[in-house]
Length: 325
Image (cartoon, rainbow, N blue to C red; front, side, top):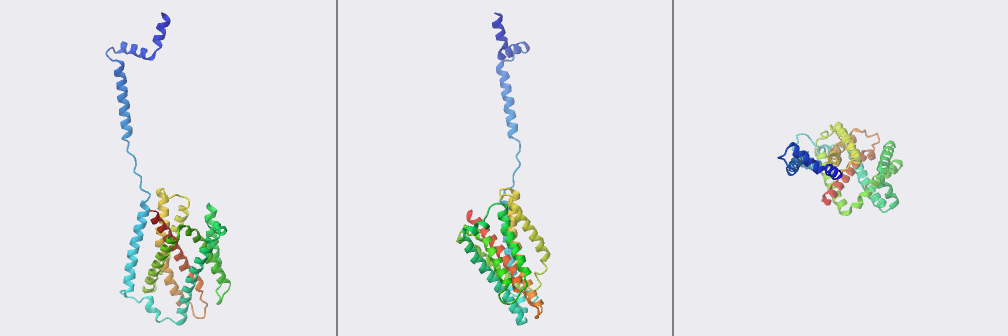
């Protein structure tokens, strides 16, 4: 009898019932659990009503970049129409070129011949490196060193190119010029994996932009774009830092998408303005160097050539992104 009573008192539900009967005879077990259930329900509703912070879509920086490109295109077309139709009050480079001596025209001609030659050497080396798996593996290596070593090779070749004095005829500077253009072709060789139609479309876009910008630079007054040296230097630093940062941050985050957008669309704007600056700088140097001083057309062509290649690489990326969509 005592054992049975002890087991009965040890039951939690029975003990709660006894306590409830002693303290509040009118309150039952069902009411106690009903209140508990309502309290839990209210707690869940309050948790569900906590506001969640909205995230900015990662594609917003790319939309802003496309808008900047569209606005710059409108400004470029307006400048082409304004200077091309002769609406400016000042004489353009085209009018001034009628008074150039013959040696100035030969300097400008030789410079653009080296630009065309650089593009040809780059195209040939790109195809040759793409067909060689061993060399392609060096330019398409994964990891940090795989990205840094090809760029260091191109920078070292360019520095050596500018350090060699120019001499008429085929010499050491011409050899280094071909080496530099071939290394740039190695940087472009991995892009051939995207397919021929994408590269062809990007090449057509590059040709159209370069032709239009060169026409604007030639039709504008001779010193119209020569004051952009300092802003272009700052812009180059921003784009270069964005290119480095985009290597370590994925474009799926907002910061990574912003860096990729600056490197891509900001690079298009930067190198377009640099092409205007370099074209008029070429015209000024061709006139400013005296006749008896040796003019270096290779050094003068390097800046224009690199701006064209940077525009081409970014147009390839933009075309590939649009096709992926």
